[in-house]
Length: 217
Image (cartoon, rainbow, N blue to C red):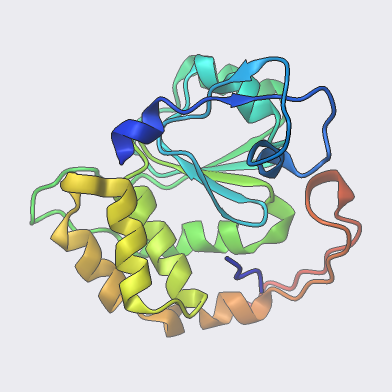
């Protein structure tokens, strides 16, 4: 299986693209000498693991940055239709959108649907979908809940999961999200995780040479 491993400050982050692409997507922007075009990542953007990223809803100002990720898929966690300008971009790049409409209301009565989280995790766990971007509107609650469940599958300790969730949610952290992550039963994903059998060589994206997948769901 795959399993690797202050919002205001993040909102203004920009990266500068170099003249050469080393084929490793966003990882190439986190060090070394850089020159050339200034790129703006989406709000709350961050790598989650190899070939997996998270963010808030991207806008047209983020397209140049997204192009460097060579995305194959987007996991979209909002019930609203995908914004038309961004839909045009993903269509032009043949990026698949997997939508799992989760209500973003902060009302205590609103419950995160377990089926939506399980469905989204299946997409994230399938390396044929990599590189993949997970996002909701602000990259805080719905995205944080999904990533928190993913971290449980990675056997992260609860303290580290909570710390990561709060790092992106900030003062807007929701106790309901944290309770959902805490009570998420990993055994409900065992049939999916055990059904993903792969051989993976040379990284992700265009360098992924072979993948074997058996769906037992």
